[in-house]
Image (cartoon, rainbow, N blue to C red; front, side):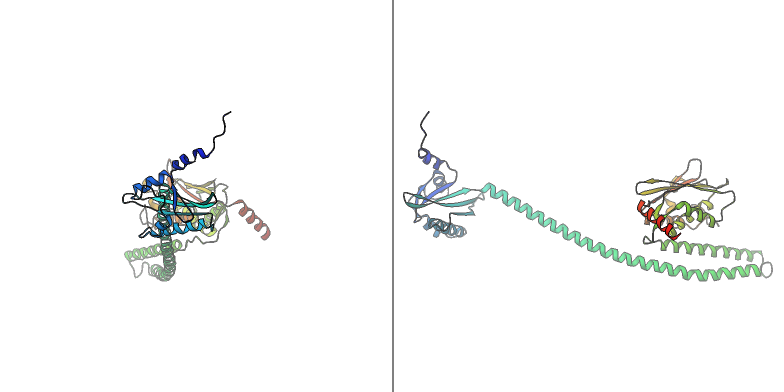
Length: 406
C-alpha cells in the first residue's frame, strides 16, 4: 500500500489553481503572497505584476474616486479581522471596465502561521450571479410597477363603475317615480274623457247627432280605452322590480286563477300539467301569465283555442313551455315581439299595444331566467321561459307554514 501523500506537497499548486484573486497580508497589512489569478488580474488592469511587499492597507486607504468607499471599507474589514474583532468580513462591490460591468465579493479571513497572524484576502468574480440578481430585481420592480398600475387602474375603474351605478340607480328611481306619477295623472283625464264621451254617445244618439257624429264618439271611446290600457301597461313595465318579495310559487295554480279572470271562450281549453314549484314573486307571476294567456286569446285562430302549460326541471331552473294553436308567428319575428311597442298586427281592438311581451321579458329576466318564442309545427306557437326552481328547504318551509296557518 503506498504511503500517504502529505498535503503540503499540493499547497502551492492548489493556491495558484484557485479562480479567486487571493493575497495573504501580514499583521501590518503588507502583502506576503499572491496566487496566479491575483497576478494576472493586476497585470490586466494596469497594476504591478508582483504586489508582494506592497502595503495593501496603504493602497486601499489611498484610493480616491468613485470606488474609494469600497476600498476604504475593505481596509477597515481587514484590520477588524487581523485584530480578532470579527472572524469574517465580506463585501460585494462593483468593478466595472469601460466595456463591461463586473462585480466582485471580497472575503477576509484570519489564520495563524508560526505564531504570527495573517489575513487571507480573496476577491471572487460574481458578475454572472450579480447580473442575474439585478435582472430578477429589475423584472420584479417592473412587475410590481405594472401590478401597481393595474391595481390603480382597476380601483379607478371600480370607482367610476360605482359612481355610474349610483347615478344609474338614482336615474332609474327618478324615471320610475316619473312614470308612476305620470301614469296615475294620465288616468284621471282619460277616465273623464271616456265618461263624457259615453254620456254624449248614449244621451244624444240619433237625436242631435247624426250617424257620422255617433261614429266619431265611438272612435273617441275606443281610443280612450286604448290609451288607458297603454298607460296601465307602461305603469306595469315601470313597476317590475327585482326586489319584489319571492316565495315558493305553483304556476299551475296561478295559471288557473288567471284563466278564471279572463274572458275565456266556452270552447277554449287550458291544460296545466303538474309543474315544479318556482322561487318567484306571486304577483309578478300573475302578471306574466295574464299577459301570456291574454296574447293566446287575442291571437287565436278559427279553431277552438287550445293552450297547454308544461315544464321540466333543468338544474337550478325550471323550463316552462306555453303552447297554443293560434295564428302563430313567423320565425324572423320571434325576437322582435319582445321589443317595446313592437306589433305584428294592426291597431285593432285585439291588436295590443306592443308592451305585454316586453313586460314578460323584464319579469323573467329580473328573476334570473330568459324567455323566447318558437313557431310550432303545423301552426300556433311555443313560448319558452325559465325561472329559478324552489329549493327543497324552501318547499318544506312553505308547506310547514301552510300547515301552521291552517
